[in-house]
Length: 461
Image (tube, rainbow, N blue to C red; front, top):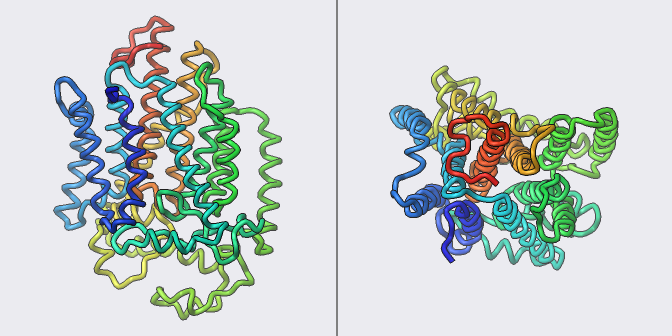
């Protein structure tokens, strides 16, 4: 059976999800993976088109030229290709996937639901297997097996507060890594999976179904609890806020009461050291061993964990403020990190990888682009045909997940550093654009308006 071009994004993301373990197992340098995936995705697009032209250059030439101009500035000023690693790859994959989804009659709603569901089922199953291995006390075996010197490594220090609290993991065991082998990525994937399965189950997609959606919703929530950490918890809170204030827009008073009680409860648990004690604790003081990597480590000995966390988080901001105006605007570049004697913590992922490396100008362009794509797509229309509602709801779910991907960069920047995460993030963004196009096409047909090219390349449902 011939693979349709509109199905390629899901296949490419799945293949990319196998790369971290493969690179770690066979010691393949990770630096080559993202550019290689771009050429693969682009090449497959060209081969699948009858006229053989490169879609991304023909339809997005203005955007590509602007990106090339910014890259040229970086290269001329000896700053490298930092824009690509600061969100440029995400936008490139977004437009490639968007064009692939549009090819021919376009991807159907069932294709989208089935494709994304398959990906999240794969991630959840991988984390369930990893959970069993950790429960059996075999996590050191995973660390030994996936221990590349030039690529991803299995981490035994990921937080697992809830798993430790309920006695599922031993206190010596670390948290989940997932098949993507990243910090905090397991909790993020389980949260996105939970939102996806719950969203597609209860958002009224009509005949579009996910097999055993209740089971997968429960499994993804269970994994979410096991992999819960500070960042993922804040992402969960943000998801609830966005849902009630932007999507559902009902029961605001009850929502505020519940959220207030939740924050009070979590503050009490954190203050007592029951949850998130590694970050928020006034009693657990910093030792010399905790700050071995800092040039001013001696000054931090005896500080509280909260004070250390704040120092680590905001140190990149202070470094950025000390730069000249040109470096503030277009970034210090990758070379700066290789030559400076300063210790630059990476806990504030977005600021380090985007603002500090690529500059304030690119940071604003990247964030504004994502907000323009996602925020208007959150709200659901109050009227319209069943098909219109279907596409609007799919658009809303993908927009919510995309915004959470962006929010996740406020800590470890897996969204821009991990190739499968880059591609999954881009796929959700592409689906926001695609579902919005399908929705607008149906709205034009329903109202009898001439909407130009709103429905070009896709067939109305």
